[in-house]
Length: 83
Image: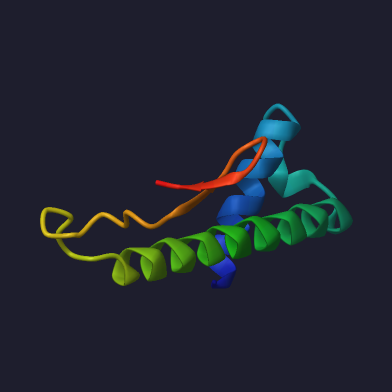
């Protein structure tokens, strides 16, 4: 994440929450609060993106040839049975 991304997201968060007051006239302390929120939000999105990409790469390319697992254990209220 770079400073321009952080600033853009911080400004967007500010405009949503502060109903579009003037970012340029706000205190540096308030701007820093929004920058910290922006860093956290960007970090979560980056981790989510990495997770999705790794999950996609781990899946078979085609489900047409995938064999069903007929020996899956399914817990039920009274016992575990084979499906």
